[in-house]
Length: 344
Image (tube, rainbow, N blue to C red; front, side):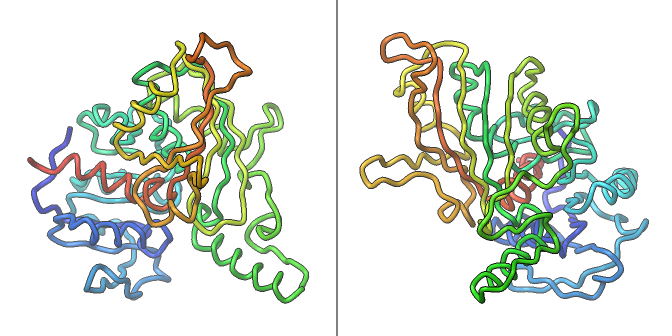
């Protein structure tokens, strides 16, 4: 695994976007020992002032010379920007952690969720952050995969509008105001109204398979992270009128029967997971509770008795999970990767 200096110099590409702003907040909150932080964005954003703890950073225009003297570069921009500038940063001597989809399925680039497969970082100078929905899914299920093994996953996502960036959140706020005023809903960013509505994830749908890009990402990325090319994954991804934090309904088929006590014990010890499962109140994982938090909330654990059982042990199990897609689903995951590379 690459070792960063004790006090690395840091650059954030796409610092003015939703993930970039969250990255700055997390670095400050966690006391990441950066010697300096450089905020980079497009030419039109140059000169913008961004909060960084008690200080402010002035945004610089991204260019070929932006990575001179940089030890660590977080990319929070588009795949096109990553493809153009990540190699430039690596050539300049920086370790790059990329949040876009540009390199996720490149066999030479590790795809990392630190609680799950930190060992796969190896000596890579370029590391990919998985898709937010995939991060939430594998974080919630990894302890079960380790304890029993998972044969099949059926997952339906309920994805917050801010997963599409700041424009998605702005659209929700604008259409909410339109709805309150009794006006006709006029979407501009999403293809359909994101208020009083739920719709298929806006990524393109493959005419042959019927899957959208988000669903295909979840399949391919889960298999790569767990090194399980045989893993069966059946996702359905939709947008819901929620500002922040994705939710996922998950049905798993295990490789061997397990009791509820077995699975609760595994989840109780899982890094990055917090069980929220109070059947008497009742209270289960919700986006309002996951928003702003670092853990993936897991609850509604119950047997799927439509699948074979062996007394109290079942092959099939159902659960519900929520995670902040801007934090654990993006910026926090990248910072946690970097923390693994700090000395000591």
